[in-house]
Image 1 (tube, rainbow, N blue to C red):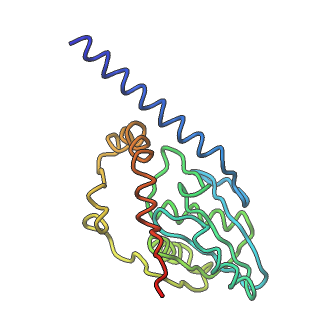
Image 2 (cartoon, rainbow, N blue to C red; image 1 turned 90 degrees about the horizontal axis):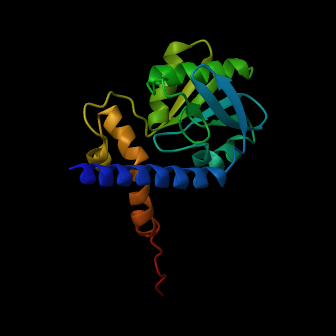
Image 3 (cartoon, rainbow, N blue to C red; image 1 turned 45 degrees about the vertical axis):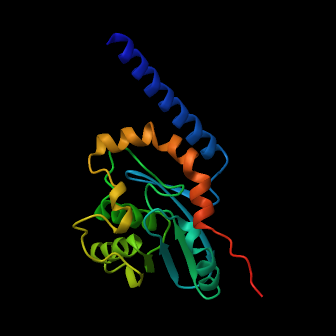
Length: 206
């Protein structure tokens, strides 16, 4: 029994080390291309381009500010366009004790706007970013000129979202344990196959 526990402990420690090594090596390859603003509960990473009335682009679940590169460039011809990473996404951080609720993300983004002198703006929100945009409009209606929604999340979820719901782990401690142990090894093992399937090249037929 003792030998089994020692082996199990060694495996867990090895998985934790491997995950830390992989995650750190990935993080070290990239640096924030935009600016960083400290707010209560974390740091907001953002980019700005163009000149004119302000527009803030807010991405959805599993996204980042880079999702809006082409849209931001087009809108920047007539507007000042801010592309932000939501708290906890991209290069924006959220402290371990800070909630990921829409209310909290709204508060952090509104604080970011205030610190950067964005007195009022129109919001463009995609998917979950749409729900957060609506929350911001409710929380600070005098500062939000308009809200444009792209395939938005507008109602509370009573179950998992789509086919990926089977991967959702409701218990936070279990979810954190999985992310720190077996998630990265599985990602390394199956990642290339999944990428090739997601971006399958199609041969051109004459």
